[in-house]
Structure formats: structure tokens, C-alpha cells
Length: 295
Image (cartoon, rainbow, N blue to C red; front, side, top):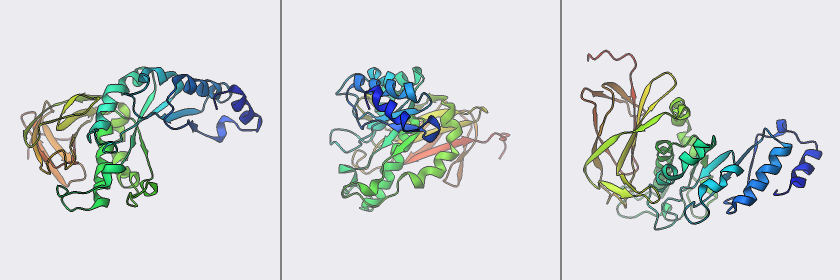
């Protein structure tokens, strides 16, 4: 795939841009020059095709910016608990450390979810010692961390094919929720909010993201100026010692908020949301546009 002759042969077989959307380049390519050669050759014969790749750990190889000329879409690794030294919130840390470079260059950033290795182990800190549920909770949490980190899409592995991983369908179960908040994700207008964790572990070191709050929140604005506050626990049960966090989110507009998928509302009168987050748990608060200030 590195040579122009490869793509010329594909073109000579009668293939056109209309026959495919894009190409997934070789997994975790570690050489920027190799990736750029593939990209250059493909674009010469298929200028409308999209190139994407899963780059793996950006901290041990070349700088992430070196890969930018070789891709249209970058799938950022999560690998949470796949390696013992990486905390659950690695996905968020990786995105906030690297994604701005790609977006500023006009590229698209996806989160790639993982739930292998230690992610499938259960221990006494897990509430029901249910491996399948733990994989499901971890997968959904990674997607939400991706949203918080500014990802514009999701690349989800088929977990049932990973050794010893339960037959969990992953992305399928979260897709309706993702589609509901898609207008906010695509508008890519988000601002980090101040959170104050009042009980439980207060923060976590999420290398390469540095030290982050144990509960992290952003306010998103869609193209119609609607507001959505997205929040998540950044901890798994082991990191949180199995306990919940009580926390406040400040700097949010006053009004009545629908807490999506939870069948409850929150009335904000002082710019502050007070709530509780279990490990892995997330809350999405959508400001009601017709709120008048009366109950």
C-alpha cells in the first residue's frame, strides 16, 4: 500500500471512488513516513476516499503531529486496564493531550474503545462480580470519556472475538443514546466546567492528560444554541475503592434540566448542579428551552 503502483493497480481493476468510502490503513502503524506514503498514493488515484487508522500509544513513538499528513481520521487508543499502569481515564487523557493538534489541522478524531485484559477481571470492589456487566459499564464509560475529550465518532471493537471476553455487543447498546446527543458532538462547541468532589477520591492521574478531577464535566452547545452538560466519573471500582463521588458542577446556566435516560429532572437556580456519580457512571443534563423559572 505504500507505493503508487499499488493504488494504480486497484484503479486499473475498475475500482472508483464511488465503490468504497475509505480505507483502514495497517493497524497501529508506527512510521509516519510509511503512513504518509500510503495516503499520498491513495489520494492520487482515489482523491475522495477517506483514510483512517488506529495509532496506538502516542507516548512511546513519534510525536502525534508527525502522523497528521497521513490520515483523514485518527482512531485514538484507550487500552484502559489493558496495561496495568494505565488508569481507566486514559482514554480522556489521550484525547485532551493529542486531539487538538488533529482538529486544528482539519482532521477528524474518533475514540477507539477497548475492554480486554484486566478490564474483564472482577474483584470484591465490583458490586455484583458480574464480568459481562463490568465490560458493558467500562465500554459505555469509555464512549462518554471520548465525548468529554472531544471525539467526533466511535470506533468499537467486536468484544466477542477477544480472548476470554464475554459476548458483549458493545456499541450497539449505546448507539441510541449517542444519536440523541449527536447534534452537540458534531457542533464541537464545548467548555470545561469547574467540579468540586466533596466525597470519595477527588482526582486521578490520567497520563498523558495529567491530574484530572474524579468527576469531570463540560457544557456543550449545539448549532441551535441548546445547552447540554455532560459529566462522568473518571474512576473504575478499583480506583474509586468501590465508593461513589458526591460532587458539584458550577458555571451552568440556571433552568430546568432533563437528565437524559434517567427519568428525572434537576432545577438549577444558583448555577450549580449537585449530584452523585458511581464509578463508571455518567449524567447528561439537557437544559429545557421552554423553561420559565416556575415549578
